[in-house]
Image (cartoon, helix red, strand yellow):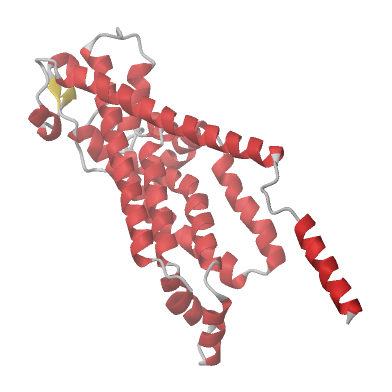
Length: 315
C-alpha cells in the first residue's frame, strides 16, 4: 500500500513539473513573419497595379475624343484619328486563344490521362518533366518558330494566296504548344487525386482501363480539369511575344484566322515600345486595354474558383 502511495505521489510530482506553457519558437516565428510579409507585398503589388490601370484608364475615358459606347461597339481602333473601337483587338485575342485551346485541351488532357492511368511510375518520372520543359522555353522562341515554320507550313497546306505572312492561325497553333504543359500538368494532378478505390471498384465491375479512365476518373476530376482549362485560356489571353511576332502589327476587325490582326497584348507591346509621347492619347489608350484585359482574366479566374467549389467532389 505504501508503494502504491509513493508511486502515485511521484506521478503527481512529475505532472506538476511538466509545463504546458507555450514555448518560444523563434525559428517558426521568423518563418511565419516572412510568409506574412510576402503575402502582404503580393497583395499590395496587385492593388498598386490595379490603381495604376484604373487611374490612367480614367484619364483616357475622360478625353473628349473618347466615347465609352464607341469603345465597346466601334470596329476601328485608331486613337490618333479619334476612333477607339476595341472590338478589333478583342476579336483577334479571342480567335488566337480559341485556336490555341482547341488544340491544347485534347492533347493536354490525353497526355494527362496517359501519365495518370497508363504510364508506369518510372515512365511518368521521365515524361512529365520533359513535357513541362516546354513551358520553360522563352516565348520569343515560340514566336520565331511560328514565323519560320508554322506560317510556311500553313501556306503549303492552304495556299500562299489564302494565308498571309502574319496571321492569327499560326500564332494560335504555336500558342497551343506552349499551353499544353499547363493543361497536362494541372489535369494530371487532378486525375491523380482521384481515390484508387474508385478505379478498383470499376475494375471489379468488369470495366476496362479505358472505360474506367473516361467514365470514372475524368468525371471525378472534372473540377480540376475545368480549372486547368480556364488557367490555359488566361495564359493565352496574356501571351505577348508569340502574337506580337506572328499575328500582325495592326488592328484588323476580321474573323478570318489566316489574316493578320493585332491582339490586345501585341498592341500594348508595340505602342509602349514606340516613340510616342507619354501624354498622347494613343499611348494612354494602352492602359484602357490593359484594364479590360485584367477584367477578362479576373472574370475567368472567378469562374474557375466558382466551378471548382461547385463541382469538386470530396471523398
